[in-house]
View 1 (cartoon, rainbow, N blue to C red):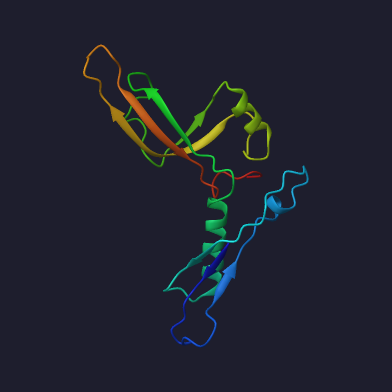
View 2 (view 1 turned 60 degrees about the horizontal axis):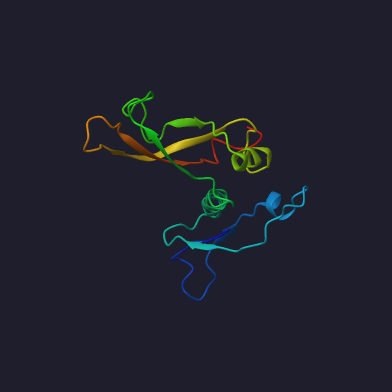
Length: 152
């Protein structure tokens, strides 16, 4: 991941400040599951400090690590925990009895091997027309690499 800044004092004829970050664990994986090298460039027109640019590069790099582990789930809104007891930004654990999820937990794509932890990004409540049917809550769950990282 490359981040290009902008320093107005340098002018248009000089190279602008930049920083780069790479995920060496994805390029040289000991288990043989390496990912191909993909370059991505982002620009910040108001940043000239190289340390700040590097922090942005590292943030963007880890937020886009493949494969993206976002989950979208639908739950019964009438059962606990009910809407109102959680909000976007809260953390939750997901236990899914599925072979695909068990394989993901066994790989190096998740920091734990027993449960998936995600942050609630958003939710949407759907109320049915019939009073006999429960509410449906659609949850969007995302990882946060700074908090939930292997080895932490």
